[in-house]
Length: 127
Length: 211
Image 1: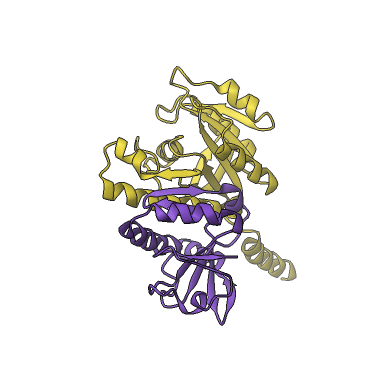
Image 2 (image 1 turned 60 degrees about the horizontal axis):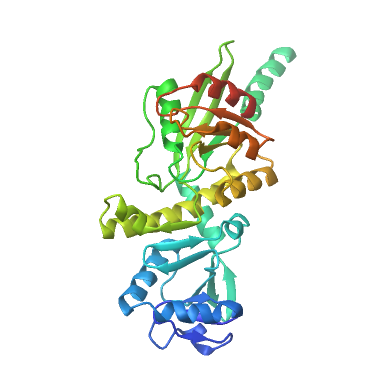
């Protein structure tokens, strides 16, 4: 599945070295993009200014929590939460209720499901 | 002596093991349906203090709020104890421009949108922890929304007992029958959480749902 850099919008094919090492712009946060959504994703990104993309990147980091290591590449399944523009979100409730993970950490080229643990630890802290 | 020991240990360990964990009662629903207003009404009625802040601008509650050990009493002297969990409103779309229209400044509106999005995810994650749920709906709005149907469907799939509150019945546009028609398999209580109207029926219905 292709990946899109959250900061600059560059799209990389599955297995590209940039997904493991980080985008050429320096960012390490990627969205999963389904092939059928590729055209739409490219168009949406083209409409965003550099500042808006940076704002989205910051918001996404805030959304997924501080548990994420900013130095390691991270892939987000934002089919469940779509950031259209800074401050504009679309949520896919059906997949959220299915408790599918939202964030995959990349380590040694493997995806690690992480968000459930992240949310559980938030809940433990609050109890 | 043996009997005494038996009794003693029976009491100590019996209490230890039979001590029921506090039942969690969750308030779920779309934004601005009145979940926090209802939480406040319950807490004011039984604890004499409010629980959450409320606002006309949607997504005022963006974090889970828990009030522990709320005890309510029925007319015939039965008591019901639970931890009340007020949750952020569940939505499919959160747009900061909606907050701008209500007079919130851009920076704050964007922050509110981000926190509200996080709140939706958190509310959903807490669902598995709930023993019973009160779904709070705005009775002046169409009940057949994706949010309402998704919440109700998921609670049914998880076998969590549900009570539906049709809130804001003090308003002329309120249509309780429509909610009852949309979710015929559930008890629906009409009330005005803001003015405490019909809260007696609500508490009565709670006794049936919270086990």
